[in-house]
Length: 287
Image (tube, rainbow, N blue to C red; front, side):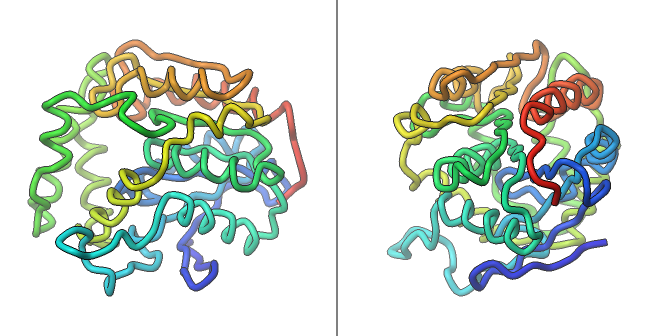
């Protein structure tokens, strides 16, 4: 069931899995993605390992607040927010959940937000898992093909959105694991039905490119960290994960051959095992 929490004027839609007495684990999704893109079975696997899992929609995605009045950045319009503001949304959600601290896992842009959250509130991040992400800047530019799908004109219909998701997956997905077309189509249709807001995606993208590089600040971070990256990611190449791991003292880098810019189902057990091993180091307060 989807619930709504208020964080400094932003409504945050979220869902939870597992026992409230489990290790609190906050999942942060990427650009234009919604909480449903953290697959139910993956969340259940994490919950089965003793986590109280919460996934949520970032601002301008899904059922959370959309800043429609801000319009589309560019043409004289200012960037309405940065990744730091999105990190404060996550902190506000933790407040609403009664979590003084949590384990935080983010994918792609969600990894960037998770990094920002750890930098802004290090006392509230028990462990950090950064997946297919980077510390900012131009350390890992996308391939030309990946850049092209990133800037494809948004679909306007459900059918078009599903077809576009399949086409995007064929470019940035995991070549070593084959297409999971049924999953891609199902999630794309579900996301379209929940909310379709291309302008919101543009505002999120503006937040990414307008936010400062975090490399120097991450060097001061003292949080157990796991960095997960695909060796065959064309959207944020492996150099992004390597730069993240190099920036954070003591970070572990886990590289999966054949993984692109998604989370192949076949890798879920290994990822869950690695995350569980990390969170067990600092169980923290129950949520």
